[in-house]
Image (tube, rainbow, N blue to C red; front, side):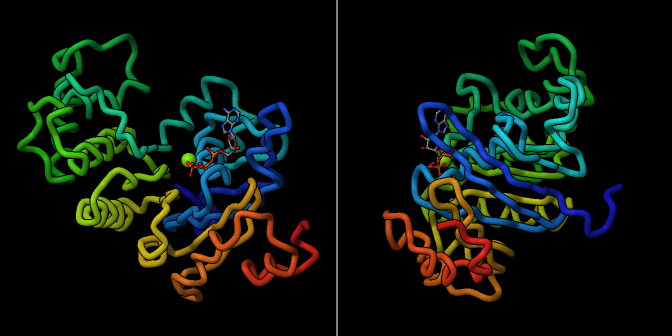
Length: 273
Ligand SMILES: Nc1ncnc2c1ncn2[C@@H]1O[C@H](COP(=O)(O)OP(=O)(O)OP(=O)(O)O)[C@@H](O)[C@H]1O
Ligand SMILES: [Mg+2]
C-alpha cells in the first residue's frame, strides 16, 4: 500500500549528459502525485522522452535522484530495479507490437518480465496468463480480435493492444511517449479516453508526452513544459488555458528569465537564466 499523499514520482536535481556536450535534462525537480495525470509538453529535443526514460529506469541520471513509487531507482541492485520496473508500464507512438504475432500473444508478452525462460508461441504461456491477457483485451474492447495478426489492426487498435500488454504488468505508473502522435483525431480521443478510464479504475498515475496542446489541457491535471532539458512550466491545468500552454512553443530561442517567470510562476531565484 502506498502512503497517502506520497508522490508517485519525485525527481531532485536530475541532470543527464549524453556526452559531446549534449545535455538531455538539466537540474529537473519534479513531484507527481499518485493518481495524477501529467502531460509533458515541449519542442522536439526538449527532453520529454529522456525524462520518461528516467522514470522507468531505462536511463540512469548523470546526477540527481529519481524516486518512483517510493523507491530510489539509482540505489537498487539490478534484480530489484527489474522488479521496480515491473510496476511501470510504457506505451509508445509506434506501439511496439510484434506484427506477425497474434494480438493475444502480444498481450501475453507483457508478462515476460516476471516469467522465466523464453516463450515462443501462445501456448508457451500458462493458461492463467492467457486468460488474463484475454481479460485485458476485453477491457480495451478488442477481445474479438485476440487471434488476429497484430499488424492487421488499425493504429488505434494496435495502441489499445499495447495498453492491454502494459496492463499485464499490473502497473501503478503508466508512461506514454506520444501515444497518439500516429493516430487520427477520433482514434486519439479514444485512446486518451481509455487511459483516463484506466486511471479511474486502477488508480494509475500517468505521465504522457503529447504534442496536442488542446488535448493536453483537457486531459491532464498538470502540465510540465520542457525547454532544452529544463522545466520551464509547471502548472495545474485548472489555472491555465490552451493558449497559456502553447506558449511553451512560442520561441525556439532560449527565453529570457522574465519570459520564463511568466511561463512558470516560479520565483525568479528558482529560474536559471
Ligand atoms: N541516447 C542518446 N544519446 C545522445 N543524445 C541523446 C540520446 N537521447 C536523447 N538525446 C538528446 O537529448 C535531447 C532530448 O531528446 P529527447 O528525445 O528527450 O527529446 P523529445 O522532447 O522527446 O523530442 P521529440 O518531441 O522529438 O520526441 C536531444 O538533444 C537528443 O538528441
Ligand atoms: Mg520524444
